[in-house]
Image (cartoon, rainbow over all chains, first blue to last red; front, side, top):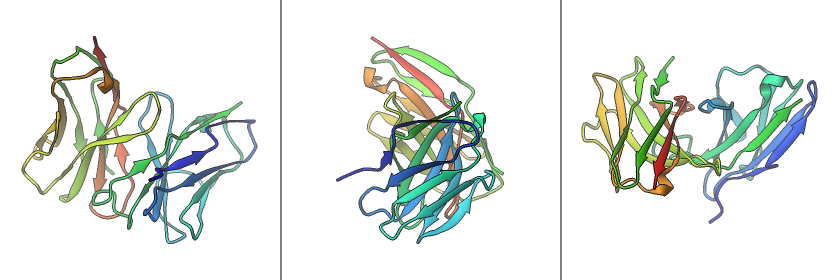
Length: 115
Length: 114
């Protein structure tokens, strides 16, 4: 049973560039959430996708956008990269939006470095 | 908005000892959920234990148990018979009733010494 898979594992970008991160949810899950984890901090909620729509959003600027595909996989796009966007980006999946009855399963993350 | 506070940046105990990690939170909601996640060096966040706010009984999962004090808004994690594999970052997290993102604390780095 495949868990949550994220690609790429590591990424280095230059300030001002755009980046796309990818996530495949755990088998049977239909909801995907994205989190940003800065060094030495806990993860911060970016947004959540369900039925190909953004359902909830944390306190992140519009430079952060996403997409969910019919097969439930998801992409996170970040435009006009800033040095402060350097972080570990975690994808988490669950079933039917619920974070309790279907606890989040996390991937191993994508380490983004902006130079 | 809710906040989660973990006041212990790092803790170190000997193998087989019992250790308690602290977590406090602030919310105006009455129905919510609390979680402890473990993040080993592999970076993957792993659910350790969860608690529903309306359940008075403290959750237990094998060597892991919580002390949930709703009035004090406290949610500590106790690890009994600690093992070397328990070495990791531990995050306390809050979820309001319904579909929303988790709010995490800053984490506690737990080191189990042989």
